[in-house]
Amino acid sequence: MVVISPLLNILGRSIRTIRKFVLRDFYEIEKLQSSIKKNNHFVDNSVSKLKVEVNKVLNKLNPELEIITNNKLPTKDCWIIDYSDYYSNLKRANDNLGIGIAFMKEGHIKSYFFYNPIKDDSFFFEKGTGAFKNDFRIRVSNETNMKETIVSLFKKVNENDDKEALSFLKKIFFDHSVIQRELGSLNYALCDLASGKIDCAIFVNPTKKTEIVLNLILSESGGKLNISEFKESKIFICSNKLIEKTVKEMVETNIIKDERIHKIF
Image 1: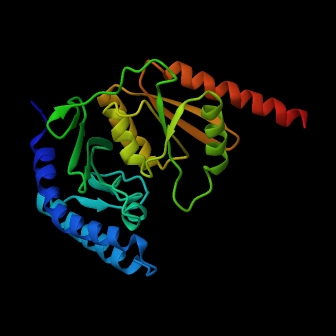
Image 2: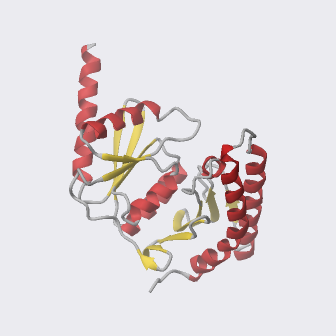
């Protein structure tokens, strides 16, 4: 039995009302993939309508709370909405998309809800309660064998501050024959990590907003976080606790090697 707060329960049921028009738009965009015509205008309209409908739901739940959509870290009670990667994935009819909604109270993220309207998957994370997907509790995987481990690497859209670090990481995992996946959505990768579908999620230089949501997801699903420094970038390594040490050592050993090589030359 899923035990979540009334707030998250109502939020989950209310947000599902957007599914009908999102599905309609998604399938229309899917048909346009082979067309020479650009679908930007259609996608823009779909995303704009989505944002209006989500705001309506949140205002109805609590009209006194401000709705934050930018990357600035708020200091007061509010809703924080994350549409990261939604536009780029919808544009290509990639079903790894979703809406992230966090509830901040007294300077802390109390609840986080992620909804994929295409797959009709709802992920719930609540402080002190646990992690859930739809109607069952979820937990990170128990995988220990690195040859069976699946690592998801995330590259931010239209930004280059993580390009060098991710190229470096990809080579490490390729050389160690580790299976790699790119889902195209950091939020979705974190939810897949929390539900045991992947074993490790790695990304570079996230926003502060992402960091505080990440901490809730990991604490409630049993995941672990390690942060390594590569040149001027911070590498965030999220994993199950059984491969945590192995992955960390694998990455940091190669960082040390890289630093030694650059000192020589």
